[in-house]
Length: 328
Image (cartoon, rainbow, N blue to C red; front, side, top):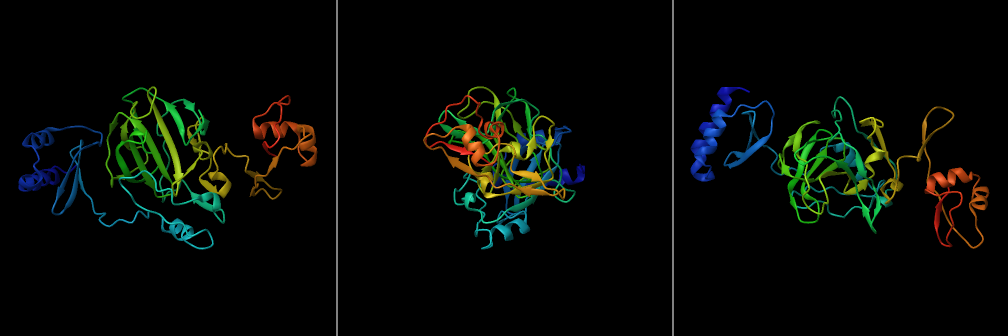
């Protein structure tokens, strides 16, 4: 940190303190604060813009007035085209999501590069065990995964991006941070005990954004982590290998079936004879009177073991008339 730059900031703050009503004690703390980590300790709205003050004695002037939320123009142009469905993107710092985009009607597959030299790398938001997965739970769909932690553990950003939302949420998330990333995704970090970032802050992968906690509709300390694309949830385990603590692949292919509740880690891609990945369209069959797993497997040229694996069934499971069975 350049001390001359820091002292210049103090002079600016002093000159504006009558407008901002900043306590003089804050200036004293700032002038004597020595810390190696960069954590937000205050913000100040001046005539020249919004200034953010960090615990390592650095500061930043935000220059994003009128920001439209577009961090990846290529993805924006693709999603906004008629060929894909004319989807729009908003930048709202007070609402979690808009529900305006239904990607189950996405007209074509979208390719995202989720890790590169240009877009940045990946960091696990927290290194803990998964305690609840992306699935139906107690009659309601659980839109992310829960990672066990202790209140006060540091939570970091998965990728580079800009913080869209950082505040207490009344909808059950508790203290929530939402980051929009340059790769086209958004990530949610919920139930935090303390927010250590703010809306509009530019974030690097691995930057601390908050402390783990138990706020909101939560029963025990944990991190609720979501991955979204244009407001639609994606199973985080489609993107991240939580056992190996790394991305499954630097490329992510988004097809409309990926945005349906209950999608589990991929059986949707296979390698063809040329060694290239090929998308496997999911197919479902509605059980009729007299159907058995054996009969359904024979009809759809698959095996009983495969049907059981795709649907979480046992060979002895009793099928119900009208039940949807995935056959591919």
